[in-house]
Length: 278
Ligand code: SAM
Image (cartoon, rainbow, N blue to C red; front, side):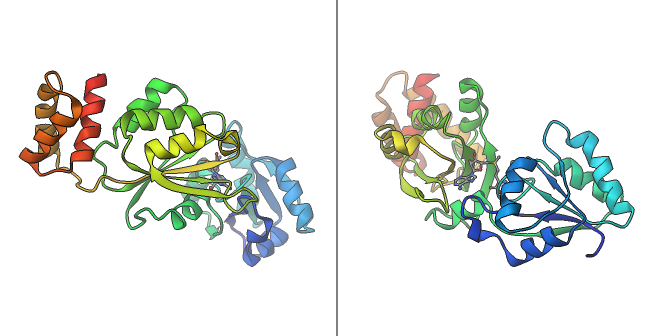
């Protein structure tokens, strides 16, 4: 096996999604650096691969990176895997890869599953241009502040979310963008795989009504606004709206601003609701 650092994607649920090249690489390398060695051992056992492993996770990556890369410098080969999907994508590995680059070590991708791409591919949302935000902040205020940045975003915005926060996060989405399109992709490639595309308000109601829909792992994809506003137009519309919402109901204010600016009423209605709350 050529001396290099191999970045190996592993399944996000369905073991059959492992690629032939991933198997070949995991069999061939001198050592596997794994986010959680016990977790990866289960995958290796299922594939009947026995390999030397070291742990490399977010808490030890900085120190561990040097000894892992030393193996490659000495002519060996190392594979990096995370618990699921593609390493570095909301997973450890960035420090390791950066250090490898600085040392002139060859870094080889062994691509495969990622919840981000799997989610987008079945979403029905616009996949030509998207932003990946990963996990939202844990605290509600920080989460809302982060979400507010996408008020006039024309691209699809992709988030990862855990079962602990899905209900609160959807409630924050609904507070800001009730009518915007949202796709929830849950438990992809697993038994209870669910993909729901509707308005934010409807997706929230769907999840709140059924405790089973609050379990597992989630990709959330917020659809972009139809009319991406320029900064100037946006500031103008927002300024006008800020004046109007103090005097008029949000719906009426949105209708007036829509007539003046030609932007869509439902997008302006969301702006009105958000302004009313601040
Ligand atoms: N590196 C991984 C990847 O390439 O997708 C992501 C790791 S991140 C720590 C874990 C998050 O990915 C989960 O909280 C969830 O948001 C998302 N995720 C992972 N597997 C998933 C699945 N089968 N279905 C939906 N989302 C999933």
